Length: 116
Image 1 (cartoon, rainbow, N blue to C red):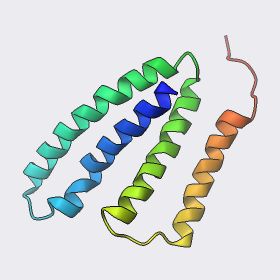
Image 2 (tube, rainbow, N blue to C red):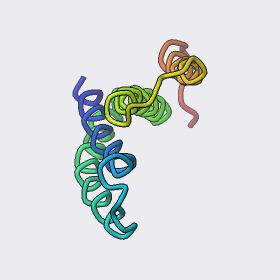
Image 3 (tube, helix red, strand yellow):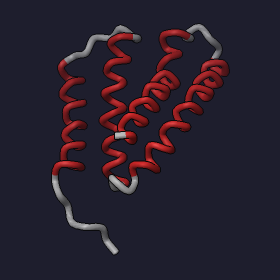
């Protein structure tokens, strides 16, 4: 559970680092947007690295990546609708649903053990 919480928190920071300047700093020079984004991303790394370290024994690397993608899209959907004020169209829901299906297959289907 700590892994999921840390990944959610890290993705909030990363979403603001990547997309926040589109709403709040669009008039900034590019160098300033990059610098501010980089500083925000530093906080993201301080959460994402421990999330992956804590989760690696509980989840495989493939599962951690699938989990991260599902969390990223979930956080982004909320961000895009509330901060960027974009409309969530049906095709985006279908695309995100397919990625959520990848998460299901990563966690819900038992694969063979690790290769030695």
